[in-house]
Image (cartoon, rainbow, N blue to C red):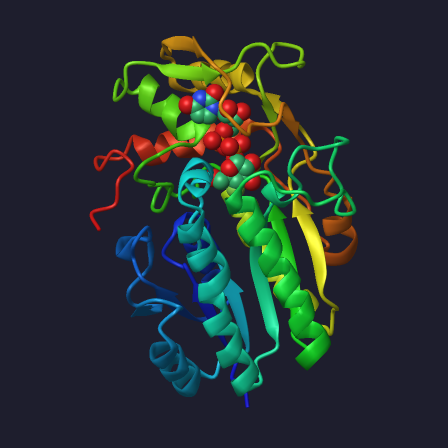
Length: 334
Ligand code: UFG
């Protein structure tokens, strides 16, 4: 019999740790499974979370976790997420993002755990044929990262057909920002995401930010993205859990604001927030970057009762700047 414990893979990572914090505030009981390859022990409150340090591909370990905690649901964050690396080393991505979760799913099937919340991505859509992107948009990923997530969505649908696994595929747009407390935040190594890189340039930790492409068919020539605050992502997970607890069927849901901002707009906002001039260079387009990715988030409101509360990227940048301005400079000890 499942207990009321939630198993969170990748719970020590950026989005996972913010979600853990939110779930704890909702009085949920949480067990985190994280191999700490990209996750940080210090991103979790040690006194309130059981951290099992290990890999979801370790069948014996996963079996022990299920036998001991009998989780009611799994929130699955653990994945590699470097799009460029996925192109040069696709097997690494298919191994970790597609094959490894099968071990987890086998344990769920054995133990009668039938609720799964999956960190999917707008990268499953590939180059958009229309914007804003709703969930019925064709899925045609253009890199192995997006493909690995898209394939796992398919696996999860097949598990629903075969043994009644109910999943919510949360298709994140561009996660950004940090917890307003400044206590947890974004710490990737290497960092590739726009907002932390821009703020590193503002802090003098890098010489400049390079804009990848200024000749896109957008008003200012730079790419447009839908920046969704990590705390809004966290609250969506809690609502997805309510949805499944209420008997909801397997469904894919976009998590975005429905508003797009260009690279130049992000840099200008970061200059306003930090009061610093950010040195900018103009570079070539980055392979695989669509000109514009903006969500149609209407379905999330309809089925989950969720809508982003932090619509202005200024708030995202302020919270990220607060995190980076701490004595540790936005880096966890471990
Ligand atoms: N960018 C720059 N310079 C940089 C870094 C980024 O101009 O140094 C631009 C990119 O070209 C892009 C925008 O800033 O137009 C945002 O880039 P990010 O790397 O921050 O994020 P992506 O849009 O590449 O995010 C994508 C997908 C997500 C996916 C994520 C994985 O949109 O679905 O990669 O990390 F999850």
